[in-house]
Length: 254
Ligand SMILES: [Ca+2]
Ligand SMILES: [Ca+2]
Image 1 (cartoon, protein in one colour):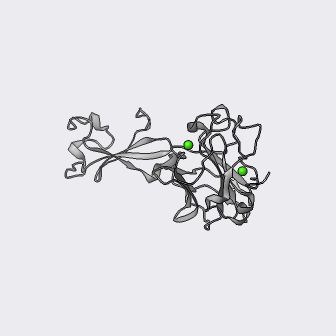
Image 2 (cartoon, helix red, strand yellow; image 1 turned 120 degrees about the vertical axis):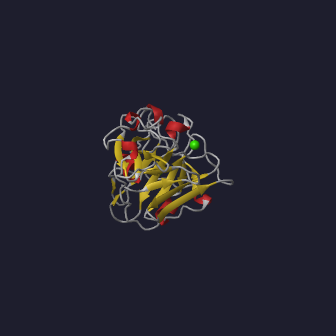
Image 3 (cartoon, helix red, strand yellow; image 1 turned 60 degrees about the vertical axis):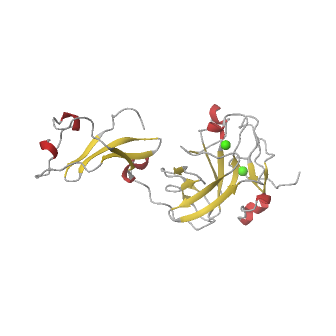
């Protein structure tokens, strides 16, 4: 949460108690809601005018007690929550994962590639990335991905921080665990794709884990034997191997 109250807006003082809308931090909206704010007859709490600030109310001894931080679905991403795209399972495929970059820190250098296998253009607005922990990233903007095209999502925009990788959608509060984790792509209630890595997976350092080009064509990314260390080298990612936004190569062949 940002440290200031510049975005404070008084929503309702009266029947339901007191609601304060606070500037969302890092793409997530929250409201501070006092527990069971007393309401007097007539609807005004403690005689306060409906447009008064709570600290202006002489009957308010201090900042309201028991403030609770709760998700505010109306303010996620600074606006309304976009409806999820309509996608079938497998319509988008996770094809490449930079889990453990070496050229730059993980905090800026992680990325992943999604391939549109739906056969039609997809607007990714409303799509959500989850993981095996608590990380969530919702695509809040329109982003049209043509059939057969790839998009790179990552921790930082293309530049020094991410090693020059052409990231098109920058996530917040999302991380790829080096030892074990998963990427779950969801559209509303539909799980579109999932890749889970754990013991037995060889997560490369300084190279992306990429799906074999043949498996990619089949939409087959569940088996770790379909994945390998990328040998691709581009001039846009500072020495770490990978093919962000581009077709993968076959695994096990030179
Ligand atoms: Ca990592
Ligand atoms: Ca690729």
